[in-house]
Length: 408
Image (tube, rainbow, N blue to C red):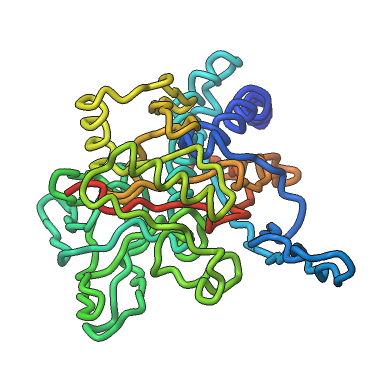
């Protein structure tokens, strides 16, 4: 059996790991594919953000004093690396019965593919979050069906939910509370079904009754298991006005942290995108090259393109299967894509060269004499754990642009 485990370990390291490392850095989203990937080398992730221009210029006359030298202003941005894990399990039965490399690969394919899809989904989703890990809020009481042993809850948006995901369901201690609490009964609940038309999620088993918060006007929120306030500091931390701090600095009093905002007033057009790109270039020295539109905004823009014969320079295709358009915006070519994790009627515009995903590649945790596998106590499964550490950082967050009200 140990010989089989050693063979499985070798197959995972030599055949699966290189593919997974490459895919995780590209496939989750067009945004991740386009930005820089930088190796993590220390306990903090930092960026030096210049803002404004050098102040030491001035006009003058012969014989008069020349301008005083005033250096350019800089701010240090800092974010902690977060822990990312992928759990791969294989049964003792598979280990004992698979006696050759081909059989082992067949046995591993489904398990590794499922774990990879989970990693890809969660990394891609977290890039658009704010670090809290909140996937959505609950807008109804939980309804438990004893006959089917499942619980239904209505949520405000189901875009970040997927079947099979294991989550924690937070609620509130009382109607006057605003701080979420997690009861033991609501930990590690597996999502059985997501009804996206009604924004309803169905969990396996019972979710304890949820308490409405009158101030927040919701019954709680859903987080990936164990991940509350432990996720990547994603794009929402930049674009959401309700997020008051970013990279260790208060947004108030640091206007260079705040993205520009353009109101589309109900209609997303080339002129609106041009205004966003130009505003960012003129005042923030940013060259926007990617516009990510929520579902309704992208649908409206596609309709506008058809009706107005907008010039498409080329189709944009990405490793993960997403596609979009490369369009002329003034004298620049900008890639426009649909991104379901951007709010429905908004578009987020970024200069991808200002971002970096600083991380260590996923690699297996080594348990010493037992290698990369450990028998899970009380089960007949062996567990291999993939781990990565890192975070997203932007050296010029104020150069981003949010376009609001893209649809009536």
